[in-house]
Amino acid sequence: METRRYLTETGKDVVGEWLAGLKDARARAKVATRIARLEAVNFGDCKPVGEGVWELRVDWGPGYRVYYAIVGAEVVLLLCGGDKRKQAADIRRAAEFLKDYRRRTTAS
Image 1 (cartoon, rainbow, N blue to C red):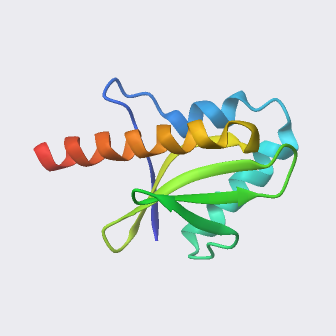
Image 2 (image 1 turned 45 degrees about the vertical axis):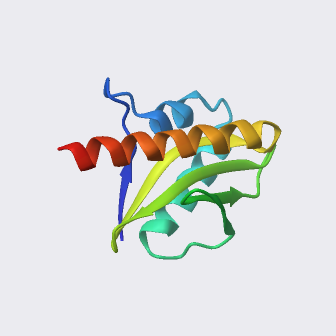
Image 3 (image 1 turned 90 degrees about the vertical axis):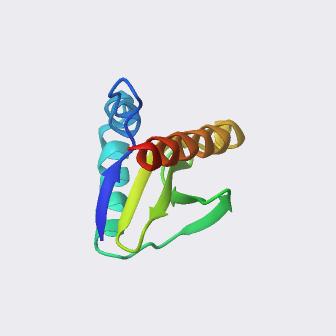
């Protein structure tokens, strides 16, 4: 499966910036490993959270999460990341990013 990252209209890589902002190097490595497993079609600990958004859980630290969507048959679109403390807000944010992505890809 191909993995892509959601980019805002201004080109901001939301997941990339979130990952770069993680102060814990081991946490960054754990999240990167989970994302690599997605590419190998090993989804592991994940669940749907609504509106086409899925939550990939990383069992480390404060409960890191990566939100993604399946686009077409072969693409995993990484939307944003967060942790358990801001889960509800992160899910809403991921849903908005997915709506924006669909709007922009349908319009082009």
